[in-house]
Length: 444
Ligand SMILES: Nc1ncnc2c1ncn2[C@@H]1O[C@H](COP(=O)(O)OP(=O)(O)O)[C@@H](O)[C@H]1O
Ligand SMILES: [Mg+2]
Image (cartoon, rainbow, N blue to C red; front, top):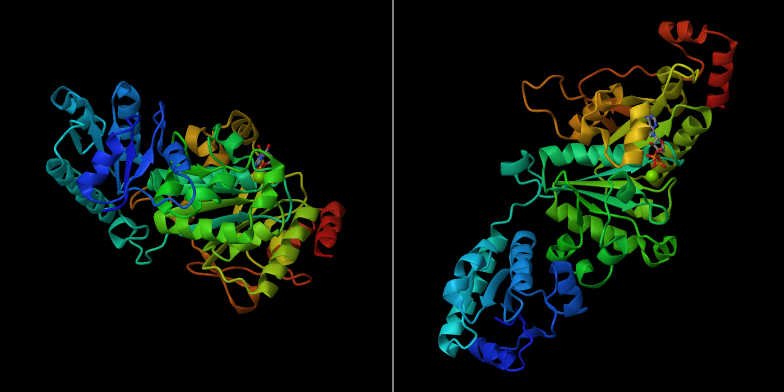
């Protein structure tokens, strides 16, 4: 066993522990105990192997040692903690409560110390192999052993991507607590942290650099946990840091997260920048959005055309229209005719939504009674169907047919092609000259 880390301020202890396992060990020395796993990995430095067993010398810093032990036990499955204490018997109960697998005297004879440390390594191996795999049929009913990556995309900004991504993630976290992660890929001006009222210690930059980029267990300790059980990778605090994040970083991050989490929700910057394109290469479900106005719908049509030309294949696509109200003069049929595809969900303009973003509490967290909350729940159910017997049935999914047209499984889609209107569309188009004018503008 050569993946042992000793945290100790004593100059002699390193040699004793190394002798006990007859192997080299890693050492973090100094008066301070790392406060948590991510600090520990940072102090270990780039390239250092991830420890299997962490031995913490509690001498004169018992509370900090117990704190670190508790966090390692909770956040790093596959790692075992052994505490060294001058009074192991008196310390045993606290050690147990802090998740340590053993507590021994620092001067324990070599042979016995070796046995303790090897037993700890076996515990670490056993707990690593007991970890559930995303998509495990036992957990999700899905035979695919990879989580589902859901990317939220739109040609323009300010159309509600972050609002939808945060609510979707919070909603999914309810069905998969601790197995849902939200990634802010609006690398320059991401505002997931603000929309969830979080103050991250680490951001996208940290998880694509250093030890977190190489090991999924380390990566998990660099995520920010939201009070709903959702994990998040928040955007960098400095827009200039975006330059340091490459499409390859994005690809690696999403693949690692998909191997660890059942749902990976990705919020993006407007348009099809290099980070969004990298995300799309690893996306199962695309949520593509626009606001209900002429420039937005036109942009959506262009973006759908480009995606088709790029030949990007998703399992499913979900077209979402936001800011619907009766004053826009545009209808669902207008949008469908323009984009030549079905609209899957229409979200209403809603005052509580704007307030919820300002407060940093998503609608699906506060469960505020509002038509938007209901619609957002419908969106969540497209990915995590409500349990049988729950009110409402999951909506059917649209899939991308060759050539980019949307087909439906489970219900019939009505296509309203430009210049070829159904009776209902004709009725709508007689609503007045303003409506006809808008529709022409949007189809142009
Ligand atoms: N349906 C809605 N009704 C009212 N305001 C909304 C709605 N959806 C989003 N907003 C507000 O619009 C603004 C932009 O939303 P945001 O999600 O940040 O868009 P994007 O991420 O696409 O730039 C936010 O202030 C948000 O509160
Ligand atoms: Mg945004």
